[in-house]
Amino acid sequence: MTNYETSAVNFARLIQRHVKQIGRSDPLTALQYIYLIGLSADAPPPVGKEQVELCHDAIRELVMDSGSYAELLGDIKVDGSKIVRPSVGQRRRRRRAY
Image (cartoon, rainbow, N blue to C red):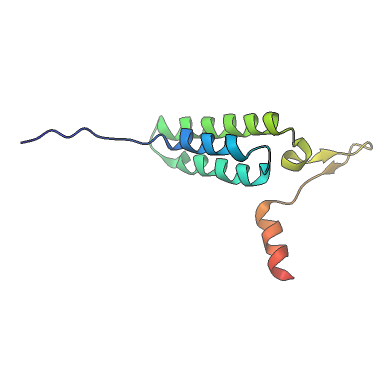
């Protein structure tokens, strides 16, 4: 009988490395990649919670590193009203409609 070692890939780290490369040039695409980390939220404890925390940390890092605050988070006008950016899904639906 032989023993095999189990290999594992740190998916969150893999995504974060990719996002670092494209984050400044295309922050919205980078954000979509980061959302993939959060897909493991329903994993058994403590993995699911850890993945959500990693996702939130990666989003914060992207926003700070890219400087694309308004593009990623929306904005607030001088009168206090919010400018909410349409989600990527909404933008894609609009493009298909034309």
